[in-house]
Amino acid sequence: MYDLSDYNIDIPKKMIAQKPLTDRTLSKLMVLDRSTGNVKTGRFTDIVKFFKPGDVLVVNETQVIPARLFGKCERNGKKIEILVLNETEENLWEIMLKPGKSIRGGDKIVLNDGAECLIQSGNSNGNRFAVFECNDDCFYSYLDKHGKVPLPPYIDRNDVDDDKKRYQTVYAKVPGAVAAPTAGLHFTDDLLNDIRNAGVHVTGLTLHVGAGTFAPVRTKNIKDHKMHSEYYEINEQSADIINTARANGGKIFAVGTTTVRTLETVSDEKGFVKAGKGRTDIFIYPGYRFRSTDHLITNFHLPQSTLILLVSAFSSTDMIKSAYSRAVDENFRFYSYGDAMLII
Image 1 (tube, one colour):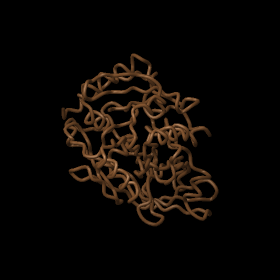
Image 2: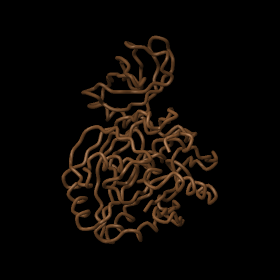
Image 3: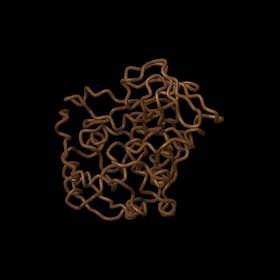
Image 4: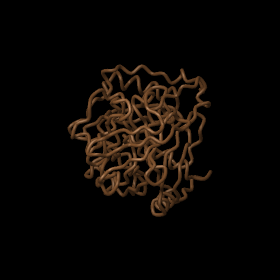
């Protein structure tokens, strides 16, 4: 189960969703029962009936920033695309450059509206560090005006105005992600209210999804893969809601692999969740024993990715392969703007 080739699933290119549906809740839902292997399909709004009073729905409240910028290198005149990843210290940002080979430390990339990106150095990941100078009060304000939505590489088109809203969950409120926690894209305010009215607690945490979420696993043995780290935070209120529910027999529904990784990072061996913040590089693959996640709401993921390894760990490799095969047969839409799966 540690051989990467075991997680290669053939997904026809035509099934990779290139744009969102007109209504978030029109997505299909596949329900996989881990205890029996049974699979059912329906609409995402069917998810309400799988909750019981006292359960908890945990969502990732990270907000995607418009992290793509375009400029020109002052030294050689080359056009450069910048993906802003995270602020490592005050006004020092980790970035990715495309193309990057022609850029060296000390270069200046000229951006729109008189802004500049000053390249400082590189790191062991192949990324760069840079300082941004602009006329806005803060760099986030500049990004809001001039940045583009960082759509994933398998969406083969330029971003449009609608992506600013649709590549974002309705509950996003903490800026910092460069990729959406896509399982949450199916929820609307009305659907969340329906879930609350069913006696379910809805609570949040934050994990800022990084570009590494799209990084392929390149090692033959999956255990040799080095996981990227991401910033997380969970407050006392959310931790108390989760712990109280577990103590009273309630089940924890995690929305997305990012929520799972955060919950498992802050849980002890008995599943008790502790409030806190930091960076996590937890790598979950088959053989992992889950401590605080009872049910998982997720999308359909890239083959041979850390995401498909996590969902395989939550159910089984064979179950996931079978479920994905059925999803192909039933014309499910795959990846970020695609359809959803509930694993119970």
